[in-house]
Length: 316
Length: 316
Image (cartoon, rainbow over all chains, first blue to last red; front, top):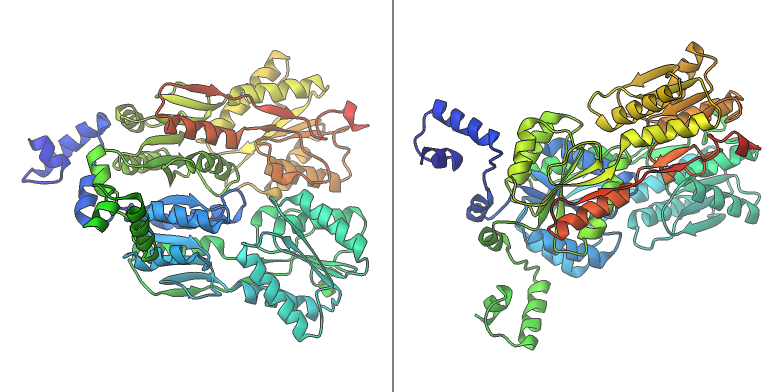
């Protein structure tokens, strides 16, 4: 009976006895069952984390930020992957909410009406992450991708480039890439410029994809003087291809990507990019859930890193 | 009462009524609470997945494989990160087992005695993944890293290299990198060779790290004719540095990495590497848990990809 009282954390048991019992239980591999406790409190120590993908580099970094903060709490992340499909997001969300998690962290502010209804009806902290261009259900942590696109366009124009192409993913449901492109086009338009060419792809990104698309777009529009890529990986592929062709980067052709992947430091030239604050987004979102906060809004500022491929003057 | 019976999946309700009620509930964002059901069955539809890190590229791919398979089931992964620390693994495991998950997928076969006791006492499928060099508690899915190291050493020797260095992570708890190094040294010894130099680092890997280490080791041991890296990222950094220095790869110096990262396809030369079967490991492990299987052993065969940096004859 003493054992049972210790393991259930009930009853009058001396500290010494408690310690002995817990140590014995530990040796035997005994783990208390918390489901009954959860039933009583109607909530469980799990945080639903819903991301589009784990196989690109961006979301694992967000998850790392989340797990850094939750590690210091009794909360643990449950991960759902939507593959950028709204119906799958709806289904994953439904499954996860059925566990009454302590909170939900979900990528993006675009959801189906049913998914949004579930989030609105859920009585727990909801944090929409990555993107601040939209109305969140509850809390929001992210950057403005429209602004990121505008910032990059402005930097490109300031450096004297005029014939500017956009190369990116075709995925119609990657709303953040779409918003960057919109902000980018807007800022060009304000300077009296149009996107001189564009090329879209589907499927995973990688260096090879960036090489191929760069070759294609330069064959079609040889007088381009800048290429803005929707992510660093295809940008790095484009950079390698240009250097092999002997193209003067950034003198003849400037290049920029997006995400601020530290992983790619060490290429022959550092690609201009923009820090998307991934780990920080994960940490802030986890903090909101851990503090059971509501209605918080954390807009982070993407930081432009001109690398070696954007500033003609610095090229020397 | 009809509504309640539908939502609890109980009682005689016509299919048409059930459908109407569920649709209405869905619009309102209603999600049934499964905790009570879990209490009755003493198990929950969650799978504990315990990995050392999410910020390198390897484990997100394993997770992607797991989530691909679990997506077709009612099971969902709960992710715990150990940062390669045995005490943290113990703690994460304890937390997760308290939920009575439907199974545990845990990286590696090395655990503290307490963690192993918990795994042995747990009444659910346990799958240790990545590494087949060791005795699993229950099921195992992985490759032999000793064998991977041996295979690479044999390929290097066959191609006529004799002054061979190893560059890798210092982390004493990365048992898989250690086993590759052991298998590698063994195979060299059998051919009457010793590792001609070695260099270890701590902290995250990246192209820059590979550049620096390559420069260091070649300055110290200029007559090296091969470098075996413990992962593709540092290998790719080494490759870029060598090409910039005008070193003939693989004529004068051969290079090889480990992991088979498709991400790096598109470098000026394709680094020799070995496919570590990551997504497949994730899928197989998830299948074992989904099928509630026990005692299964799936040893996958790493596949050597000689790329452009291992076979002197193919260099042309």
